[in-house]
Image (cartoon, rainbow, N blue to C red; front, side):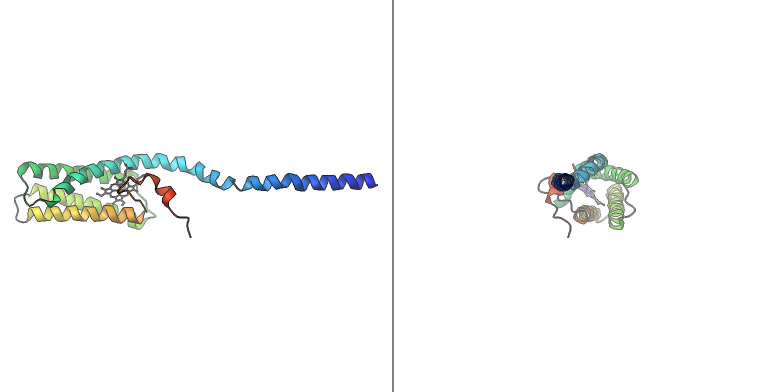
Length: 173
Ligand code: HEC
């Protein structure tokens, strides 16, 4: 009888002891789950990031010129080209990376496309009075959409490219 009791006690203790490491194992499991999701998002992101860098290249060209007080024919040509590129790129992003559940994102993407399209229109009609100011205004509208959307999504690109954004993010309240 005592022997059975002793064995029971032993078994109980063993069970309790073995459960302790079991509980510990559960704790690090949570970050593992996050890791599993990350690579899939990464895949989608890299193509969007590529398109964004292309937009960035074209945008920087027109931005650099936006402080000038006069454009020559060749400059208008550059603006026209950059504007066209941005329209194509934005359309492509809207087609491939639309986010129907994020209204702000959708709206800002559309605004970016509209600003780029208007920039093209202005550059086509470069001899019209006020064309220079109109072009610079559209560049300013473009910049506004970049800044607003990146802020909306918590993307901090400048000064360093946003690489570490996930780590920078504070835990959700
Ligand atoms: C409606 C939203 C939205 C708008 C507007 C927008 N961006 Fe972005 N941008 C993003 C998102 C989302 C990413 C992150 C892409 C990723 O990493 O998957 C990004 C990333 C970037 C990057 C980093 C790309 C890389 O190499 O990783 C640059 C540069 C950039 N955007 C420039 C611009 C510029 C310039 C404009 C405006 C002319 C602009 N963006 C407008 C959403 C937007």
